[in-house]
Image (cartoon, rainbow, N blue to C red; front, top):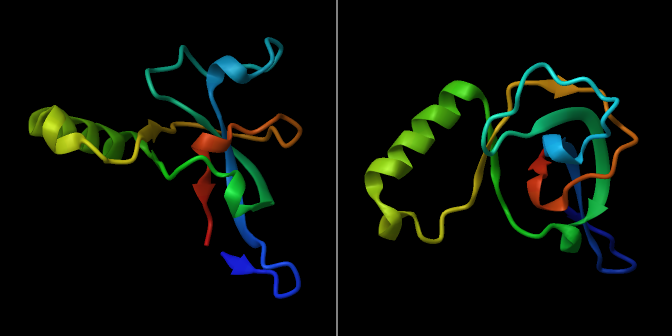
Length: 108
């Protein structure tokens, strides 16, 4: 993250991720998506930090399974306030699609 010294705006470089349901019908999918799955694009963008709705983690399958299991065993009270997690098994080249701002993975 950096700040524009003239405007005071804060900027970040993000790698865009997409929910499978938000992809056009003509975009191929490797298989039926799992719950909380996103597809990571190979497209980075510079956006204002204020556009990000909140932090999240986009994890590969093994880490997603571990974290999901840990959260399941900890119970709902222990999980309050944790950032959402998403599964990413595939990377796609979809630079022209509209990003889902709440599912951005930071690339600092």
